[in-house]
Image 1 (cartoon, rainbow, N blue to C red):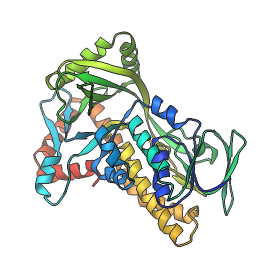
Image 2: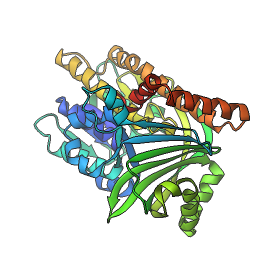
Image 3: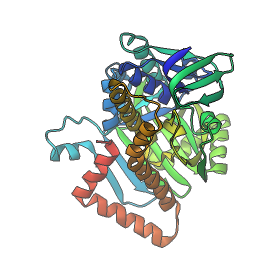
Image 4: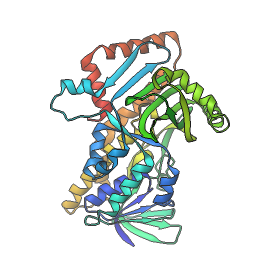
Length: 402
């Protein structure tokens, strides 16, 4: 079998990139042992999509169908523990100073299963562009020469291509096969992820509350059966998170009470909904994100702390840029697998990636420090940003990715 591009990893990142490249006229093969149906059934997480990267989904023809299932984030409220000082970002403040913008929110929260489903439907109905084929198998080996690459599968198939994309997650097998080294910073934190039903309206507010063990994020979701709903991503020390996960299965009322301590005045009575999971948190930085006829994408290229909810937005910006560069190069009849071209892409993404890596890593370390002088420094910083409109709008613009 032969194709223009092989994407190893067919979850959210891999499927989004496949659709984007398909729209540019490329033939793509996605390789993943899981079917789309299995992904939809298994992935119960939510994703926060900022206003800027959301336009990417708009251009792909996905957002119009998805919008009814996405909940807007109008305000982001940042709190430092029990301090009375808060920093609030509201899209209406930004819009009042930029009247030409048609901004309607800071971003949206969408369930991964809905996102995957609508991306898949768009792939299936975009056959007038490129072709996308999905193969449910595992990669066993890769060979690369000056003119092409070959992927060997567990089902004994072999596929030749001009370019391989590794979008197979933070512990990427493809990254390991081709010998790209990475550095890891272990946070000794895990993220407890669940969904809650609550009595009061969330009023489209996203909360980021910094606590001694790590940040508690509460993200607004669409109502279900006339009940208000939000997503929880609570980062804390590994032992504490494991304890919360265990409690959520045997005594969910304990977690509900713990969340009410932080959110009762806002959300009222809280009840856990559905299953809960825990994810280990670490910063993973590959030495390079490209090699001969191969590029890393998504968490395979940069796995960061979820402290600002920007990981997937960083990926979306990278995929949009990569698709555009690939199309421009192919239109000139040039090789999209050339190492020079891939190095140019890597260079174009360096500032954005490093800025977000350093910001998330630094914020996590700063807010975990409980020394009195650090607390005073943090609260002074929050107060200064809150009372400086120009600085506040700059932070808001970056958070929205515009």
